[in-house]
Length: 507
Image 1 (spheres, one colour):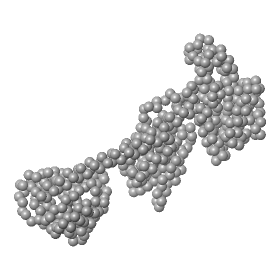
Image 2 (cartoon, helix red, strand yellow):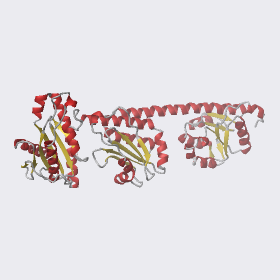
Image 3 (cartoon, one colour):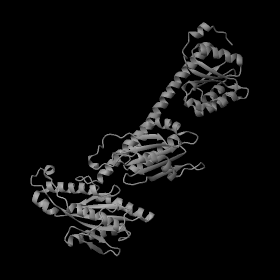
Image 4 (cartoon, helix red, strand yellow):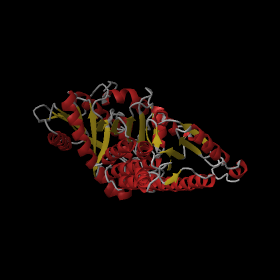
């Protein structure tokens, strides 16, 4: 072993603050190498046996939370009393391929060098080793490691960009939520993952995808909703009165929090429509706080998912909205009514439908022009909004016709609401001068003809429910207008002209 001067080693401080693991069973040799590396500025941790080194590697998870514990180089002797350096290099390469290894031995042959390189070593030194050779070989390995880490970082960035582009290319919001869950589950190797869609007009999230690994404790989606999503649902945004006028350009940042139970991380993708997408994740052996830190490392993926969800949700909502009034349109009614009838069939609760037509609207339109007519339609929509409940769904069916979907409401309850609407229009006059710019558009009167049908009282299918409500509305028209007609149980119409009802009765 050469006895090099300390002054020479101090002049080679090219390993400043580099953390090096040294595996060397010869204690005398180890002390010399350790002093040389320390004089070059390195921080060295020595292991005399393969067992001691393997025990240290079993605690390597600490590296994830501490930069100071993570080594940057491994210097390992190929011959150890309780194992081989090749085995250690192979294990190291499997788990930490971006931290370089330098092999050394006193029994060097070409085959030995080749074996070390195949195992993953970036360099090979033969004992006895000169000070300059050791330090410069380690410096070269360190630079190689820096290139590997830069390449890994670049590879990760390209990988994340590729995932983000995949999400951006999706054209359906529910498919986006399911795809994001699959991608993030694969990237983070989570134990359980769920995706939900929450329609602001509904009271309960819809489960889209359930990814739970077999053989572990399973969380039921209903439990997850009550325990982890409840805080999000309680503090949700209000539904905009006019979806067409909302700010759909500004991105609403996703909300990411640890659930109250501390186990799940919940990601909420939000939209100005007040609809939301939820992703719930948990990883076995990891707290929610720890998982949140890992999720934050792939934030570009989450932000792209948030942007895509908002864009798709807004586009879908606008396609379901009537531009003039901001109410939902007939296309929305087809979807919503089918959902409500399905819910009624599942839980046994009734659902009713009002068809409403404005009487005398054609006279207003013909006398004062289409601008005043359009303003009358908007004024009628505002009047209807004032009367219906928050749980009811108001739609413009087309022209001067409106519909109201009444969940959990039987025919009698729907009749009460219909009569309130009829009385409200009968007793009201409209001043549309400012809105239209037409001075004569003052003290305008319209009344309503309303048809009421209910599932399952007067219809057995969605199509029958629409047909019965529409037929009942036309019966009101034929009877002289300004009246309510109920579709009875046998599908015939029951005319109620100017019926007196308890207007203060709760629906």
